[in-house]
Image (cartoon, rainbow, N blue to C red):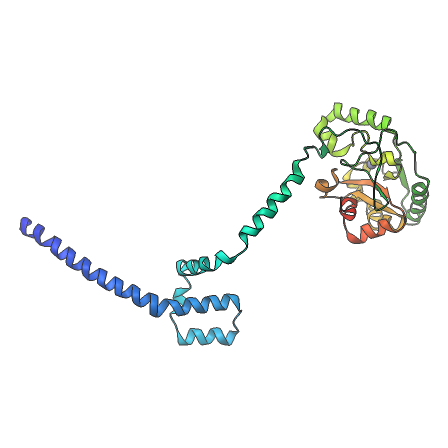
Length: 291
Ligand SMILES: [Zn+2]
């Protein structure tokens, strides 16, 4: 019994496998040429040109198989690949490689490594720009800008009418004073931390005489804190400073652009209607000037 069944079983197996193969091949051929092609073509059409509701209903009623074919990703992906070679992937790659050399300047905490002291201040469209990439010469020592001071007084008077007494607790700083200040912060918090909130000598906007750190009298506890920005006085400044020529210089979430963390207290004076334009645009000074 055992030997007979062992001899017969391979024959039965081969026969049944052959029968299955024939059925499978026939099925595949039928599937490919009769069932698959039309629904796939319809699928592609519906993706490229959004079909109206009437169109899609017509497809479903005339060919009920179409819903099954939607779950066949292989057919769809091969037809997608056939369309891809004409796309412009080759032309896009050289563009990105040509952009790379721009980033070859080595930066550390936003500063250009090995940069020599500036010999002249940087103006863009007539506007003095002072940041981590555009320092002032050590000899730039004009003191507090009279126009900026007058603008602050005007703004402070308007704020007083609203019930806030604004105090410009830090204005012009000389190169030498900024050196003392920065060194003190580095000794206290380390260079990396200090570079986020205090400028190195030559790189402080305070040296321009156009910047003020502003607080509210009676709320000294909020000076130099981000909480000042949440206080009524801080909010009033954010919404109204541009009317007097000032912008919030280091807004929240813009550290990668300005080089400094959010400073709710630091305002920069800009002549004419520039502050209003920067405010209306909702951008930083760097973005406004395109630097
Ligand atoms: Zn400041």
